[in-house]
Image 1 (tube, rainbow, N blue to C red):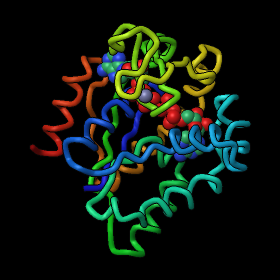
Image 2: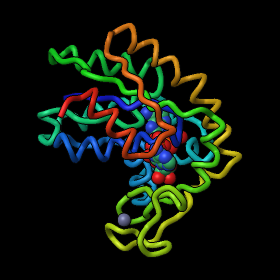
Image 3: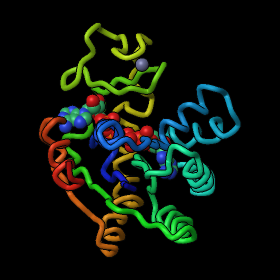
Image 4: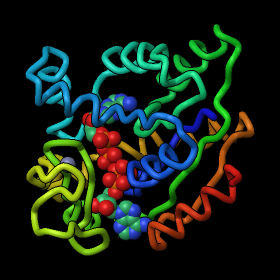
Length: 214
Ligand code: ADP
Ligand code: ADP
Ligand code: ZN
């Protein structure tokens, strides 16, 4: 099962992708997580990506595409994957199609998690990310058991630099200009599905399970 998660920054793509990965036994591939791991490890790719991420801009396509396509070759992707944060531009989607069609495969579902812009800024300022394992929480909607400490690995939680309101507004603008056109792109391929992302996380997931099947 090959799935793409679409939606604005903070719509809940990562939250839902993790649940999909667990239920359907496919890896969760997040390009944002890959970049953040590279930044943490001080790699050259991380340094390049950080320049764009801190401004709320997209990392250039040429730094993203090969990275994801190489990731598909890992053995854990043999039964599919859930892509979170990729593709984010039409050229990325075209590169993905080309790589898949070369091996006779296609995407099964693109799931758009719909959340209006008004809800996004509030959601992002409450998001907390674990520096250890990348788990994501929310101070109101998904709090940790112990304040400021990851439930899974015990590491410290932070507010991502790019989740500050000024950067979030930029990311939303970039989303509308560069990523939203993917909805029509996948609609034309007949794989586009929409879910309401404003309801409780469990209910969003239930709607996704309706689409993917038990
Ligand atoms: P969110 O899920 O909140 O939108 P991500 O963790 O997916 O955030 O991405 C964080 C940042 O990483 C983006 O704002 C962008 O700078 C960069 N990024 C992630 N994926 C891509 C991609 N496919 N293409 C270009 N930039 C990306
Ligand atoms: P994305 O990957 O699309 O950027 P996340 O999954 O990281 O989004 O979610 C953004 C923030 O909103 C996180 O703090 C998360 O805990 C919270 N969140 C996710 N889904 C919901 C929901 N359905 N209702 C309320 N808050 C949510
Ligand atoms: Zn953790």
